[in-house]
Length: 219
Image 1 (cartoon, rainbow, N blue to C red):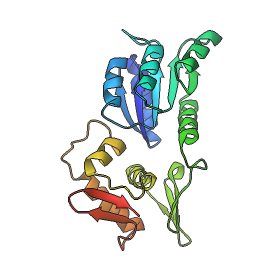
Image 2 (cartoon, rainbow, N blue to C red; image 1 turned 90 degrees about the vertical axis):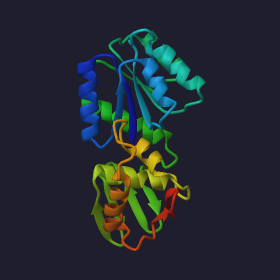
Image 3 (cartoon, rainbow, N blue to C red; image 1 turned 135 degrees about the vertical axis):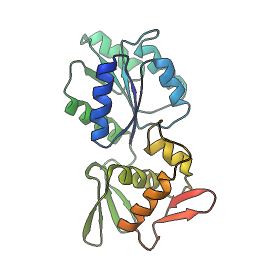
Image 4 (cartoon, rainbow, N blue to C red; image 1 turned 180 degrees about the vertical axis):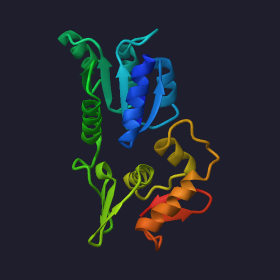
């Protein structure tokens, strides 16, 4: 799952990014709404953490712009304010949830997971393909009576392919969604992770197919 974090306070932004990454999320972080909107034009995100009190333009106007762009990505508004009218204004601008500073990082992760789950077609959080059950929140795959543990990146890769089952996904698109914006687009990272993922769950290459010159597809 990929998160866009828009927060102008550098210490808090670093804390949020580090904690979310430890929980298996990919996080792109920027200090301004303008930079956040630019990234939204380039990448697909599963959730946006949007600070209300941003420099130049506040979170309310940025949230409205996100919705005007036709993006239905869940937005969690983050602010030091707690007054009810600020919350209502945030919801009116298109926010899906609201968290008030200071907050516990575990609560933040719980809210992120909740809005992603609500926006997902698969409401129970478990994906299925063939005779395989995929549990993203546990980094676990269940198949043929066995439980197989995956790394964060292996799970992110598998989940993205399965959620786009039947669609050919290029290596570049996988890098944009599963890795952060600092990744070298010419790296063999995707190829390497496909290899390790197949070794663990798909040694006969029946689940993840390589489409020469185009990318990969889950069937």
